[in-house]
Length: 259
Image (cartoon, rainbow, N blue to C red; front, side):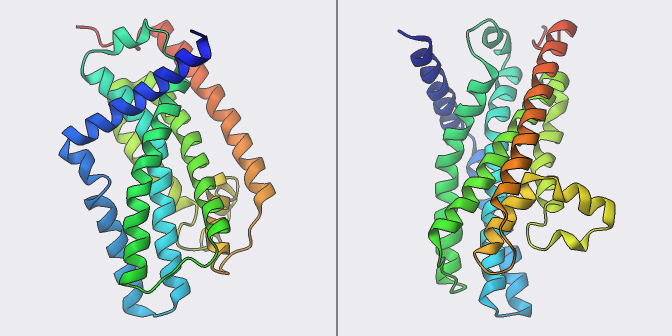
């Protein structure tokens, strides 16, 4: 069997591990039902109390879904790594042929499945309760794809943090995508920020990804080339950082949970 085939099997095994864990853990079930629903209803009901503009409703629906896409694509692989650490199996994982990028791709598969559930929930409620309908599916799906790619880049960064910090990385892993989404102007233009913060926000691919979603509602100017450039830059930084973090963790003996 070829190395490529073996790698594909390991990636699918990671995705299966994540989905099985979700079935057995109520908290993770809430992660694709209750918590997204709380975010969705809190934002849509707040916006609806002040305006009946369907563009504003659409901004909240698409922005909230894009936010969850980034969250799940960032979270799944790193949570799998942390599960192995907490269950005392990380030693076995580290001596196996598994590569860190296989964790990332396995997490991406499970993220797609979870986002399909959340997408039906958000878009269905948006249509039935708030009378919002997606009018440009091609452009909207492109925006969602951009959010997913951003989530993968954040996942690579988070994997590096997990290598270095082990159990102490979990708080960072949960906070990281939310902080990035807020900084990226998920429901508002980044022009509301002070100058230095705005400059930082403009360098984030997530800002451009949310602009792609806003553009479907006529609320932003899409800039696909800028998204590609910023994404490539942050991807290069993420890979370099995680490669360095893995080498540092190996040197310092931080990859295993010593008993």
